[in-house]
Image 1: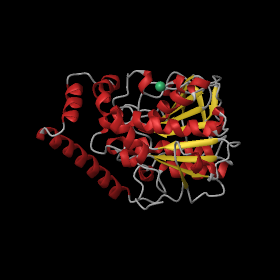
Image 2: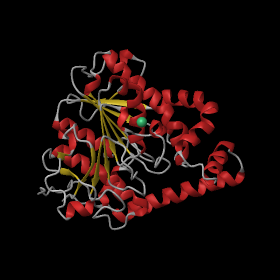
Image 3: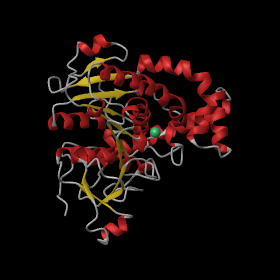
Image 4: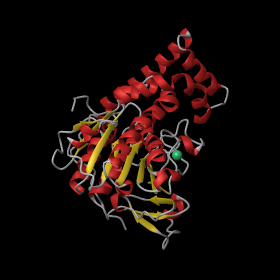
Length: 369
Ligand SMILES: [Ca+2]
């Protein structure tokens, strides 16, 4: 039995205008990428796409082909351009920038090492500005509990024209500086088991890379992957993507598997929301899967705000769940009350339906913080 929870009521979106804008972004991105290739101006891009075209399309091969020449440049860019902004109940709206390898910035902030720390980072073409998915998660978290919440914004490094560049070189570089910040917080007395890395889409895999460096060695901490990105990650080696060995407990919530999200299970617990693949109920015009892919923010935020309302059941398929063939199987709440002993594939037939307002969370208005 599921409790009906209304989607967030403050999201009134001109859906058609937003979809048009998104379609334009993707069209421009694709066109620009092709033009760049045709001009032969970028050997790196040409090489990447040749690899993909020849069938060498796993993230591992892409990374190996470029990482040596670009690593130093990418690392330097990441160190100067990734933004970490701390929010607490004392400064819910006015975030304070903190910096990796700069303990003074941490000690002069409201960071409290005795409290749990929750991070949120975004995916491709997104950011953490007000009304973004991560900003909404931050608000829900601080309403729910007294945490340190750190938003990780790498939008200045986002290779907006070529997704593959992000996968191959940007995320590994960003993960290095992100991991340094997590390590700084551990050095300041925080417990690794109090660290919770939340990431959407590419941000889910970024969280995995960070967890591998900082949490996995202690077998502590939690990672929540919100519809982890699928393209170039499906079938790739676990060292390049979110995987169960990246923290003590790794969960993934799938809403758009097979399009923008990954289908395969990548966590200790994988929850397939309303089936988890294709289009979510309520997304009438799901251009490129964006509505369903971004709906996962609503799914997680509603689960944070209603900790006992959303129950997932261990089950082999959505069809079997709906046929009530999995009655009596293990269950777990979604959100912060998730049973961290849960293992395997779970499904939820939720009363929460998507709508076009979900898109806004991936393409927030661009006013600054
Ligand atoms: Ca991994």
